Image: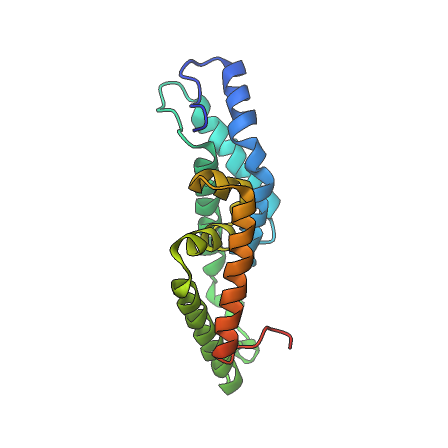
Length: 187
């Protein structure tokens, strides 16, 4: 379990905690934001703002200590990205003046959307058919983006076992999808 942040207000203690428990997750946060919010153009700004907000929150006198720097960092970033999405989603009526430029779903868009949804349902079925440990490993590595080391520590298994389970799980999922007639994209 990672060390708790310091209870005293010593700047050195806060800096050490931040350097050890928060800052190492910066690159993973950037990758996670790119994957989770592909529309976001200023990921680095969100990362910096998240780090800054976490630092300010942690150094405020009298606040409860944060037990997981990584969890807090990702939660702050998620909230910032969600706020940004809401803000960008609000469009003034003036920006929609030229109605002919609006995208409208045609039959091919609908068919593609249905196809993708069906493929996702097949993938969910494939994951459910995996043995429990394999499903845990695939979920943690491929969906939540944990490293092999993090998964190994979290599940109490070796990194080699994690790699083996990922390979087996991905192979089983691909076989299941092939049986359902799903072809890899681009083929």
